[in-house]
Length: 231
Image (spheres, helix red, strand yellow):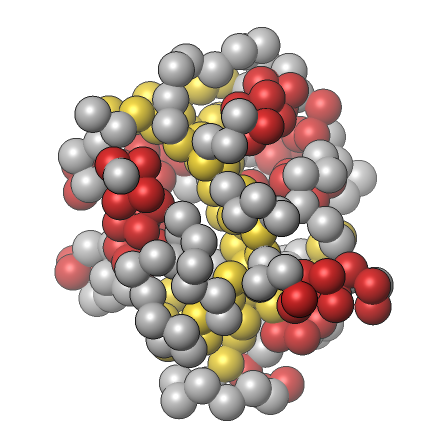
């Protein structure tokens, strides 16, 4: 059976949502891991959930990166195992240097909470294997610092390496400032490392994984990575 761990930091508030989707929706053996733990249980997938770790003091994710569990997360990833950072989890991965780039305040300087459209940029990955190239997903965002930034060299490396997972778009796949909720460079909503076993994304797939929430596009991402582990 696939095993997963959801890391809980002080201020995490989407940890229960992620555990619910894993255990109750996907029927995966999953458990919480407190951030002060120096090791991880033997798992296939580690999820860093959304929220406001350490109250977002200094910068989002800037303190959480020093939590003892993050060294275990780093070792887990080095073995080629899956790491999935959602919203604040994405921010923590950036601060920890497990993904390239940085996160800035939203261009509007306002907290943004709404449904957005995502265009699938890369499909040959553990997280997107069940998706089609350019497939459009409807998934919500909820963040104040989701404006992804990187320099020109890093952006080219992401593009050339197929490391951009999702980009903000219209419902029909067009790109434009009006469809970019935070001003992210190149409309980036989610990126991966070079080995493509680490994904960070600002939208919340756990909030689009049940019919009662009027959206199940998030399940396509969860099922992609779970299918990867099964194989």
